[in-house]
Image 1 (cartoon, helix red, strand yellow):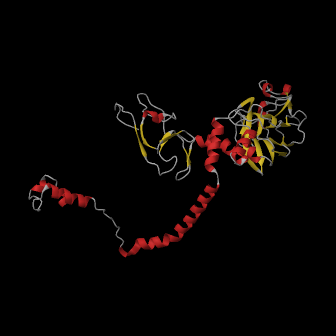
Image 2: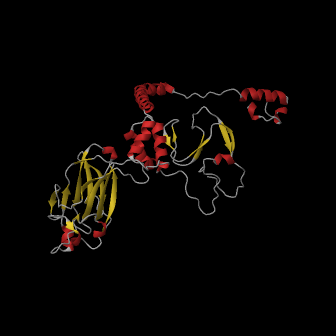
Image 3: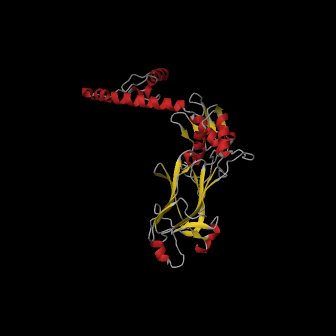
Length: 374
Protein backbone atom coordinates (compact mmCIF):
# COMPACT_ATOMS: atom_id res chain seq x y z
CA UNK A 1 0.00 0.00 0.00
CA UNK A 2 2.75 2.44 0.97
CA UNK A 3 4.84 1.66 -2.09
CA UNK A 4 1.79 2.34 -4.21
CA UNK A 5 2.15 6.02 -3.36
CA UNK A 6 4.28 8.18 -5.58
CA UNK A 7 6.52 11.00 -4.39
CA UNK A 8 3.90 13.53 -5.42
CA UNK A 9 0.85 11.92 -3.83
CA UNK A 10 2.74 11.05 -0.64
CA UNK A 11 2.24 14.68 0.39
CA UNK A 12 -1.53 14.37 0.56
CA UNK A 13 -3.93 12.34 2.71
CA UNK A 14 -5.51 10.31 -0.13
CA UNK A 15 -3.74 7.07 0.83
CA UNK A 16 -4.75 6.97 4.51
CA UNK A 17 -1.26 8.01 5.59
CA UNK A 18 -0.24 11.20 7.25
CA UNK A 19 1.55 13.50 4.88
CA UNK A 20 5.32 12.93 4.94
CA UNK A 21 8.20 14.74 3.43
CA UNK A 22 9.75 13.60 0.17
CA UNK A 23 12.99 12.78 2.02
CA UNK A 24 11.16 10.52 4.49
CA UNK A 25 9.24 8.81 1.69
CA UNK A 26 12.42 8.18 -0.30
CA UNK A 27 14.24 6.83 2.74
CA UNK A 28 11.47 4.39 3.65
CA UNK A 29 11.09 3.32 0.04
CA UNK A 30 14.81 2.62 -0.25
CA UNK A 31 14.74 0.40 2.84
CA UNK A 32 11.77 -1.62 1.59
CA UNK A 33 13.03 -1.91 -1.98
CA UNK A 34 16.45 -3.09 -0.86
CA UNK A 35 15.03 -5.79 1.41
CA UNK A 36 15.40 -9.27 -0.15
CA UNK A 37 12.09 -11.00 -0.60
CA UNK A 38 12.15 -14.78 -0.07
CA UNK A 39 9.46 -16.93 -1.66
CA UNK A 40 8.80 -20.32 -0.14
CA UNK A 41 6.51 -22.94 -1.74
CA UNK A 42 3.57 -24.26 0.22
CA UNK A 43 3.87 -28.00 0.88
CA UNK A 44 0.74 -29.29 2.64
CA UNK A 45 1.32 -32.77 3.95
CA UNK A 46 5.03 -32.74 3.15
CA UNK A 47 4.56 -34.12 -0.40
CA UNK A 48 7.58 -32.30 -1.82
CA UNK A 49 9.86 -33.56 0.92
CA UNK A 50 8.57 -37.10 0.38
CA UNK A 51 9.28 -36.94 -3.36
CA UNK A 52 12.76 -35.58 -2.71
CA UNK A 53 13.47 -38.53 -0.44
CA UNK A 54 12.29 -40.93 -3.17
CA UNK A 55 14.54 -39.26 -5.71
CA UNK A 56 17.62 -39.30 -3.49
CA UNK A 57 18.93 -42.74 -4.65
CA UNK A 58 18.48 -41.80 -8.31
CA UNK A 59 20.16 -38.45 -7.76
CA UNK A 60 23.07 -40.20 -6.08
CA UNK A 61 23.38 -42.65 -8.99
CA UNK A 62 23.30 -39.88 -11.60
CA UNK A 63 25.88 -37.95 -9.63
CA UNK A 64 28.24 -40.92 -9.64
CA UNK A 65 27.74 -41.54 -13.37
CA UNK A 66 28.31 -37.87 -14.14
CA UNK A 67 31.43 -37.81 -11.99
CA UNK A 68 32.80 -40.89 -13.77
CA UNK A 69 32.09 -39.30 -17.15
CA UNK A 70 33.84 -36.11 -16.13
CA UNK A 71 36.84 -38.06 -14.88
CA UNK A 72 37.06 -39.91 -18.21
CA UNK A 73 36.82 -36.64 -20.14
CA UNK A 74 39.44 -35.02 -17.95
CA UNK A 75 41.75 -37.99 -18.51
CA UNK A 76 41.48 -37.62 -22.31
CA UNK A 77 43.19 -34.78 -24.19
CA UNK A 78 39.96 -33.85 -25.99
CA UNK A 79 40.77 -30.18 -26.41
CA UNK A 80 44.23 -30.89 -27.77
CA UNK A 81 42.89 -33.57 -30.13
CA UNK A 82 40.19 -31.25 -31.46
CA UNK A 83 42.48 -28.26 -31.98
CA UNK A 84 45.20 -30.37 -33.59
CA UNK A 85 42.72 -32.09 -35.91
CA UNK A 86 41.27 -28.75 -36.96
CA UNK A 87 44.73 -27.36 -37.65
CA UNK A 88 45.70 -30.40 -39.73
CA UNK A 89 42.50 -30.12 -41.75
CA UNK A 90 42.67 -26.39 -42.42
CA UNK A 91 46.44 -25.98 -42.59
CA UNK A 92 47.59 -29.23 -44.17
CA UNK A 93 51.41 -29.44 -43.99
CA UNK A 94 53.23 -30.10 -47.22
CA UNK A 95 53.77 -33.80 -47.91
CA UNK A 96 56.63 -33.09 -50.29
CA UNK A 97 59.47 -35.45 -49.55
CA UNK A 98 57.33 -37.59 -47.24
CA UNK A 99 57.79 -41.29 -47.94
CA UNK A 100 54.56 -43.16 -48.71
CA UNK A 101 54.36 -46.95 -48.65
CA UNK A 102 53.92 -48.60 -52.08
CA UNK A 103 50.42 -49.50 -53.20
CA UNK A 104 49.13 -53.08 -53.04
CA UNK A 105 47.04 -54.38 -55.95
CA UNK A 106 44.50 -56.87 -54.63
CA UNK A 107 43.13 -57.80 -58.04
CA UNK A 108 42.45 -56.44 -61.51
CA UNK A 109 40.94 -59.71 -62.82
CA UNK A 110 43.69 -60.10 -65.42
CA UNK A 111 44.21 -63.78 -64.55
CA UNK A 112 40.60 -64.88 -64.31
CA UNK A 113 38.80 -65.14 -61.00
CA UNK A 114 41.89 -66.51 -59.27
CA UNK A 115 41.05 -67.22 -55.63
CA UNK A 116 37.76 -65.34 -55.81
CA UNK A 117 34.68 -67.49 -55.26
CA UNK A 118 31.60 -67.18 -57.45
CA UNK A 119 27.96 -67.87 -56.68
CA UNK A 120 25.10 -67.88 -59.18
CA UNK A 121 25.43 -67.24 -62.90
CA UNK A 122 25.56 -63.43 -63.08
CA UNK A 123 29.30 -62.97 -63.62
CA UNK A 124 30.04 -65.85 -65.94
CA UNK A 125 32.87 -68.35 -65.92
CA UNK A 126 35.57 -65.69 -66.29
CA UNK A 127 35.93 -61.89 -66.25
CA UNK A 128 34.91 -59.87 -69.29
CA UNK A 129 37.60 -58.76 -71.73
CA UNK A 130 37.62 -55.28 -73.23
CA UNK A 131 36.04 -56.60 -76.42
CA UNK A 132 33.15 -58.16 -74.48
CA UNK A 133 32.26 -55.03 -72.52
CA UNK A 134 29.79 -52.37 -73.62
CA UNK A 135 31.12 -49.54 -75.74
CA UNK A 136 31.30 -47.01 -72.87
CA UNK A 137 32.95 -49.36 -70.35
CA UNK A 138 36.49 -50.01 -71.63
CA UNK A 139 37.58 -46.38 -71.14
CA UNK A 140 37.50 -46.83 -67.34
CA UNK A 141 38.99 -50.33 -67.18
CA UNK A 142 42.54 -50.29 -65.79
CA UNK A 143 43.74 -53.40 -67.60
CA UNK A 144 42.28 -55.81 -70.14
CA UNK A 145 39.54 -57.37 -67.99
CA UNK A 146 36.83 -56.44 -65.48
CA UNK A 147 34.13 -58.14 -63.42
CA UNK A 148 30.72 -57.49 -64.94
CA UNK A 149 27.28 -59.01 -64.35
CA UNK A 150 25.81 -57.17 -67.36
CA UNK A 151 26.72 -60.08 -69.61
CA UNK A 152 26.47 -59.09 -73.28
CA UNK A 153 28.73 -61.81 -74.60
CA UNK A 154 27.52 -63.59 -77.74
CA UNK A 155 24.30 -65.49 -77.15
CA UNK A 156 23.18 -63.38 -74.19
CA UNK A 157 20.29 -60.93 -74.43
CA UNK A 158 20.07 -57.76 -72.33
CA UNK A 159 16.90 -58.68 -70.40
CA UNK A 160 18.27 -62.13 -69.69
CA UNK A 161 21.49 -60.55 -68.46
CA UNK A 162 19.68 -58.26 -65.99
CA UNK A 163 17.65 -61.21 -64.69
CA UNK A 164 20.72 -63.20 -63.66
CA UNK A 165 21.90 -63.04 -60.07
CA UNK A 166 25.17 -63.91 -58.39
CA UNK A 167 27.98 -62.96 -56.06
CA UNK A 168 31.78 -62.72 -56.12
CA UNK A 169 33.71 -63.20 -52.87
CA UNK A 170 37.35 -62.22 -52.57
CA UNK A 171 39.92 -64.10 -50.51
CA UNK A 172 40.62 -62.62 -47.08
CA UNK A 173 43.28 -59.91 -47.10
CA UNK A 174 45.10 -57.82 -44.49
CA UNK A 175 44.28 -54.12 -44.27
CA UNK A 176 47.76 -52.60 -44.05
CA UNK A 177 47.08 -49.34 -45.91
CA UNK A 178 44.73 -46.45 -45.15
CA UNK A 179 42.61 -46.52 -48.30
CA UNK A 180 40.87 -49.07 -50.51
CA UNK A 181 40.24 -47.86 -54.07
CA UNK A 182 38.35 -49.51 -56.93
CA UNK A 183 36.23 -48.79 -60.00
CA UNK A 184 32.48 -49.45 -60.01
CA UNK A 185 29.53 -49.06 -62.38
CA UNK A 186 26.02 -50.41 -62.98
CA UNK A 187 22.80 -50.27 -60.97
CA UNK A 188 22.19 -48.14 -57.89
CA UNK A 189 20.14 -50.62 -55.85
CA UNK A 190 21.52 -50.40 -52.30
CA UNK A 191 22.37 -53.83 -50.94
CA UNK A 192 21.39 -55.53 -54.21
CA UNK A 193 23.78 -54.22 -56.88
CA UNK A 194 26.79 -53.26 -54.82
CA UNK A 195 30.35 -53.82 -53.66
CA UNK A 196 30.68 -54.48 -49.92
CA UNK A 197 33.67 -54.47 -47.61
CA UNK A 198 33.19 -57.12 -44.92
CA UNK A 199 35.06 -56.82 -41.60
CA UNK A 200 34.23 -59.05 -38.62
CA UNK A 201 31.32 -60.45 -40.67
CA UNK A 202 29.70 -57.01 -40.87
CA UNK A 203 29.39 -54.60 -43.80
CA UNK A 204 31.85 -51.80 -43.06
CA UNK A 205 31.36 -50.02 -46.40
CA UNK A 206 29.01 -50.45 -49.35
CA UNK A 207 28.92 -48.75 -52.76
CA UNK A 208 26.57 -48.98 -55.74
CA UNK A 209 26.73 -47.84 -59.32
CA UNK A 210 25.10 -44.67 -60.61
CA UNK A 211 22.76 -46.16 -63.22
CA UNK A 212 25.56 -45.90 -65.73
CA UNK A 213 27.73 -48.52 -67.34
CA UNK A 214 30.76 -46.23 -67.27
CA UNK A 215 32.65 -46.94 -64.08
CA UNK A 216 33.82 -44.34 -61.55
CA UNK A 217 36.39 -44.53 -58.75
CA UNK A 218 35.45 -45.17 -55.13
CA UNK A 219 37.83 -44.48 -52.24
CA UNK A 220 37.17 -45.91 -48.80
CA UNK A 221 39.12 -44.77 -45.74
CA UNK A 222 39.96 -48.04 -43.97
CA UNK A 223 42.72 -46.70 -41.74
CA UNK A 224 40.81 -47.33 -38.51
CA UNK A 225 40.79 -51.08 -39.33
CA UNK A 226 44.48 -51.20 -40.12
CA UNK A 227 45.91 -54.54 -39.06
CA UNK A 228 42.57 -56.37 -39.36
CA UNK A 229 41.47 -58.86 -42.00
CA UNK A 230 38.69 -58.18 -44.49
CA UNK A 231 37.09 -59.45 -47.68
CA UNK A 232 35.20 -57.95 -50.60
CA UNK A 233 31.80 -59.08 -51.86
CA UNK A 234 30.40 -58.05 -55.25
CA UNK A 235 26.64 -58.60 -55.30
CA UNK A 236 24.04 -58.74 -58.08
CA UNK A 237 20.72 -59.59 -56.43
CA UNK A 238 18.34 -57.53 -58.58
CA UNK A 239 16.53 -58.90 -61.62
CA UNK A 240 14.84 -55.72 -62.89
CA UNK A 241 16.15 -52.65 -64.66
CA UNK A 242 19.79 -51.87 -63.94
CA UNK A 243 20.08 -55.27 -62.31
CA UNK A 244 23.82 -55.42 -62.88
CA UNK A 245 27.12 -54.37 -61.34
CA UNK A 246 30.66 -53.99 -62.68
CA UNK A 247 33.95 -53.41 -60.88
CA UNK A 248 37.69 -53.49 -61.43
CA UNK A 249 41.15 -52.78 -60.00
CA UNK A 250 40.94 -53.17 -56.20
CA UNK A 251 43.91 -51.34 -54.70
CA UNK A 252 45.23 -50.65 -51.19
CA UNK A 253 47.05 -47.32 -50.86
CA UNK A 254 48.45 -44.91 -48.27
CA UNK A 255 48.19 -41.96 -50.64
CA UNK A 256 45.57 -39.68 -49.11
CA UNK A 257 43.25 -37.30 -50.97
CA UNK A 258 44.27 -33.65 -51.15
CA UNK A 259 42.11 -32.59 -48.20
CA UNK A 260 43.54 -35.25 -45.87
CA UNK A 261 47.14 -35.33 -44.58
CA UNK A 262 49.06 -38.56 -45.11
CA UNK A 263 49.44 -40.83 -42.10
CA UNK A 264 53.16 -40.16 -41.67
CA UNK A 265 52.50 -36.43 -41.20
CA UNK A 266 49.72 -37.12 -38.72
CA UNK A 267 51.99 -39.48 -36.80
CA UNK A 268 54.70 -36.82 -36.74
CA UNK A 269 52.35 -34.17 -35.36
CA UNK A 270 50.91 -36.68 -32.87
CA UNK A 271 54.39 -37.40 -31.56
CA UNK A 272 55.12 -33.69 -31.19
CA UNK A 273 51.84 -33.12 -29.34
CA UNK A 274 52.16 -36.32 -27.29
CA UNK A 275 48.96 -37.74 -28.77
CA UNK A 276 48.03 -41.20 -30.04
CA UNK A 277 48.54 -41.27 -33.81
CA UNK A 278 45.58 -43.54 -34.63
CA UNK A 279 43.25 -41.51 -32.43
CA UNK A 280 44.39 -38.22 -33.94
CA UNK A 281 43.90 -39.60 -37.45
CA UNK A 282 40.29 -40.50 -36.60
CA UNK A 283 39.70 -36.95 -35.39
CA UNK A 284 41.22 -35.58 -38.60
CA UNK A 285 39.15 -37.96 -40.73
CA UNK A 286 35.88 -37.08 -38.98
CA UNK A 287 36.54 -33.36 -38.64
CA UNK A 288 34.37 -32.40 -41.65
CA UNK A 289 31.48 -34.26 -40.01
CA UNK A 290 31.93 -32.22 -36.84
CA UNK A 291 31.87 -29.02 -38.86
CA UNK A 292 28.95 -30.02 -41.07
CA UNK A 293 26.22 -29.28 -38.54
CA UNK A 294 23.67 -26.79 -39.82
CA UNK A 295 24.85 -23.31 -38.99
CA UNK A 296 22.68 -21.08 -36.80
CA UNK A 297 22.93 -18.30 -39.38
CA UNK A 298 21.14 -18.49 -42.71
CA UNK A 299 21.55 -16.85 -46.10
CA UNK A 300 20.61 -13.20 -46.46
CA UNK A 301 17.44 -12.40 -48.36
CA UNK A 302 17.04 -9.50 -50.76
CA UNK A 303 16.90 -6.29 -48.77
CA UNK A 304 18.53 -7.72 -45.63
CA UNK A 305 21.39 -5.79 -44.07
CA UNK A 306 24.19 -7.76 -42.44
CA UNK A 307 25.44 -5.90 -39.39
CA UNK A 308 27.99 -8.47 -38.26
CA UNK A 309 28.63 -12.20 -38.69
CA UNK A 310 32.03 -12.38 -36.97
CA UNK A 311 33.47 -14.18 -39.98
CA UNK A 312 36.73 -12.23 -39.61
CA UNK A 313 39.08 -12.81 -36.70
CA UNK A 314 39.42 -9.02 -36.34
CA UNK A 315 35.65 -8.41 -36.38
CA UNK A 316 35.76 -6.87 -32.91
CA UNK A 317 38.05 -4.10 -34.16
CA UNK A 318 34.87 -2.27 -35.23
CA UNK A 319 33.26 -2.74 -31.82
CA UNK A 320 33.88 -1.04 -28.48
CA UNK A 321 35.34 -3.77 -26.29
CA UNK A 322 35.46 -3.52 -22.50
CA UNK A 323 37.31 -6.13 -20.45
CA UNK A 324 38.98 -9.36 -21.53
CA UNK A 325 36.06 -11.78 -21.76
CA UNK A 326 35.10 -11.60 -25.43
CA UNK A 327 36.93 -13.21 -28.32
CA UNK A 328 35.93 -14.12 -31.88
CA UNK A 329 35.72 -17.88 -32.44
CA UNK A 330 35.81 -19.36 -35.97
CA UNK A 331 33.85 -22.42 -37.11
CA UNK A 332 35.32 -25.60 -35.67
CA UNK A 333 36.85 -24.04 -32.55
CA UNK A 334 36.24 -26.02 -29.38
CA UNK A 335 34.70 -24.57 -26.22
CA UNK A 336 35.10 -26.69 -23.12
CA UNK A 337 33.17 -24.50 -20.69
CA UNK A 338 30.19 -26.52 -19.49
CA UNK A 339 29.41 -29.29 -21.97
CA UNK A 340 32.28 -29.56 -24.48
CA UNK A 341 31.05 -28.45 -27.88
CA UNK A 342 32.32 -27.38 -31.25
CA UNK A 343 31.41 -23.97 -32.62
CA UNK A 344 29.30 -24.43 -35.77
CA UNK A 345 29.03 -20.74 -36.73
CA UNK A 346 31.45 -17.82 -36.19
CA UNK A 347 30.62 -15.90 -33.03
CA UNK A 348 31.85 -13.59 -30.30
CA UNK A 349 32.16 -15.70 -27.15
CA UNK A 350 32.73 -14.55 -23.57
CA UNK A 351 33.80 -17.89 -22.06
CA UNK A 352 36.69 -18.96 -24.26
CA UNK A 353 39.11 -18.95 -21.35
CA UNK A 354 36.67 -19.43 -18.50
CA UNK A 355 33.67 -17.90 -16.81
CA UNK A 356 35.74 -15.75 -14.47
CA UNK A 357 36.50 -13.03 -17.02
CA UNK A 358 34.03 -10.16 -17.42
CA UNK A 359 33.47 -7.65 -20.17
CA UNK A 360 31.13 -6.21 -22.75
CA UNK A 361 31.08 -5.34 -26.44
CA UNK A 362 29.24 -2.40 -28.01
CA UNK A 363 28.52 -2.35 -31.73
CA UNK A 364 29.05 0.65 -33.96
CA UNK A 365 26.01 2.87 -34.53
CA UNK A 366 23.61 1.86 -37.28
CA UNK A 367 20.37 3.19 -38.72
CA UNK A 368 17.24 1.12 -38.13
CA UNK A 369 15.74 0.64 -41.59
CA UNK A 370 14.11 -2.76 -41.11
CA UNK A 371 11.32 -4.10 -38.96
CA UNK A 372 13.23 -6.95 -37.31
CA UNK A 373 16.68 -7.44 -35.81
CA UNK A 374 17.88 -11.05 -35.91
